[in-house]
Length: 235
Image (cartoon, rainbow, N blue to C red; front, side, top):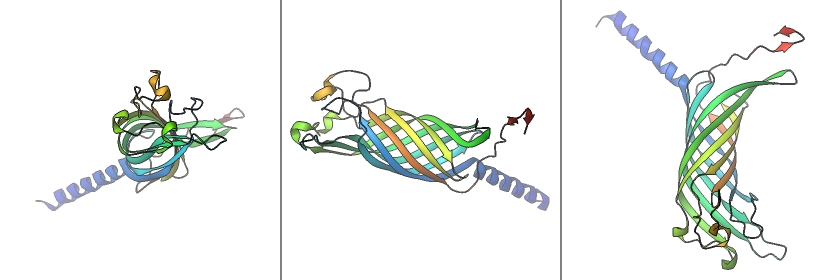
């Protein structure tokens, strides 16, 4: 094989490897969850989001172009519901659920101006996730809590989600995400309280996530900011 052919082949492989490294980037994520299960509040039947938990995992981001990307994640996430005790210290219970969850998101980088300044550190994302319950525990007095038997729970979770990211750097950002399950965590026919009522979202997981994400390796594709018009001039 001729030397110049080997050199061309090597250059093509290096170019492909560099392009691949810029297009696909992996990272880690970790943070807090604030959750509730619709209908689980037996005292006043509202949505309170008292239960705190944590989430953590890993992700791979695939850059589609300078503004858009796809992100695949594998996370452990705590969901569930908590009802604090009343003034007489009665009525406490907690539904503690843990899931292995696989989200897939489409993310879009946006620009906007605020007080004539350009904000170019924000991404919006939408997507869906599929999860499997791997942990379940119910705490509280028997007359104030949902039964903990497995047949009253769906172990598969399918959720829709939306998020906003703020990029501190090209490799480190904060993510605020909301997700709502399409499949009830607690079955609607559970023989207890408001779950007997077949209404929208009854028994569904509702989750706010506050996470930090760190992305290894390559950098995001640079996006040229739009021109800003100030005092009749374009900068």
